[in-house]
Length: 110
Image 1 (cartoon, rainbow, N blue to C red):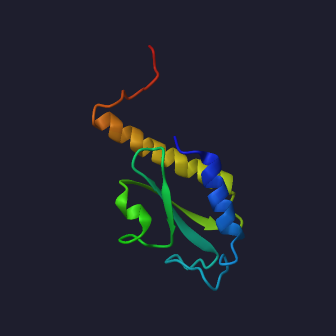
Image 2 (cartoon, rainbow, N blue to C red):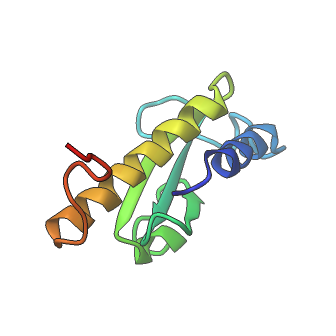
């Protein structure tokens, strides 16, 4: 499983970055105080990230499982990180299940 603490630290660093300023950010939602952050994985263990919409050429493009959040200046990095990791974990587990590599209720002994 991807370490939530690592993702939390990444998001915290991005929030503290001198580039995290309204003049440098913006999105289609008209919110200039946020940054799109995508985290991707292939195996649920290693991960890469990208900021902004780099759909076709960012480092995430080469991985099948993606999770995206909008990081705001008042966002809680730990909460967003937990959401990202849970979404990626769910995607990887679903893929493993569909490929017959795990049970739907892994660890369920009943």
